[in-house]
Image 1 (tube, rainbow, N blue to C red):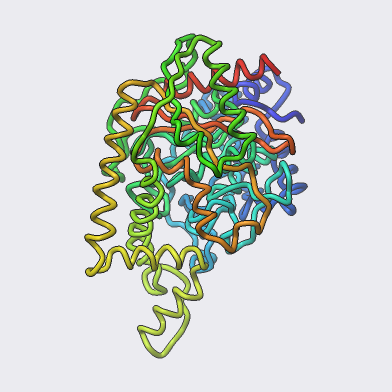
Image 2 (cartoon, rainbow, N blue to C red; image 1 turned 90 degrees about the vertical axis):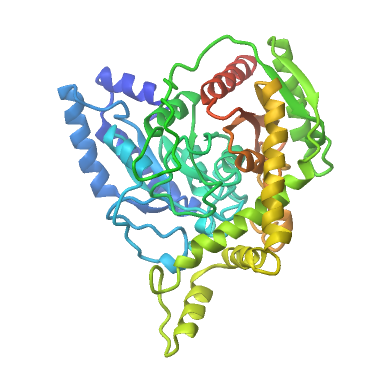
Length: 477
């Protein structure tokens, strides 16, 4: 069976009688059986359950009562609650934990007749940029299995790239959907903060966490965004704005786009990524878009601000995993020792590193020096970014300083690993939508992605410009 680019292709073949949801589901299960042993993209696969669901959806299609996502096979990152299924956040501390409810965004997909095929590998509690921090082993990049797929949604991106599912749902706190999408050569969409309900998403940093989509086409990203967006009585932070028809994204509009000098002048930026980014800028100009170079004077503060604030929020959010309320308990005669032992053995090194950093910046002696100051700087970054977006429709930049790196290359150097988030964290600090789209490969055949950021709740035009870029790139190949 061919690798389908979009749900519309799948539904066309179903309508023509060439395909059923059952045979499609069998196809993905077969791919998982053949490839997942090497890639380690899925942690759980719901084989018997999804085949039964496929039968029911085929019957709905015959009865003309099927939802708009009939035929969509979805993998979900192991940070989303799905009732009566394991939810472990790729962590030993939640080993064999079974969710008692379903995340709102996942329930909306199920209600539209999507099939959830399994939970996918990720960095523990979504903390990482390589998927090497999972308690269940590293996930591998299907483009080159000696390399990382990116993180934290590495399993989600690898699964889409390897055709183990049609789309994946990930979380994006600082680039965790966009960076792995770039490393694996697929599309990664981070919507505006609050566009999609976070109810049922295991919290890492609550003012940054965003539900994201990894797909093979802009079309699939649009329909998934449309289905998942909107109000939710269980999430007081979710937007109550009317959800646009995201599937109606195509236009021939010409846009005003900015690129940031300091980003493209960065010494650590891979030369091939730099060249392909400038090549794309030239191509956009040839297509009639207006491109201008700009500066952001707060650029050096974005990454430290992000790590101070997310560590602080992680420290608070992960305090519940103590062996009593949540988490695997290490037995001890002493209560305090039980807490220490449960958390020390249950959490991995990176999670403990961020919890300790967050606890430090929230401590009474350093609260104002770090946490309060970072909140003030966050506001300055938000203002500077908004000033730019008041003048331009989009900001264009690379996604990562380098293409996918070898497994183990950065594992022993946390600071170098954190630098992989250099270009992606701005969208989360500000709360604006951003997308990663593949624009080509380097001389080693590794994918290169480009990032576009836009104004809050401007996903429709973000999808449009992304589709325009992919279309003229495909025409020029």
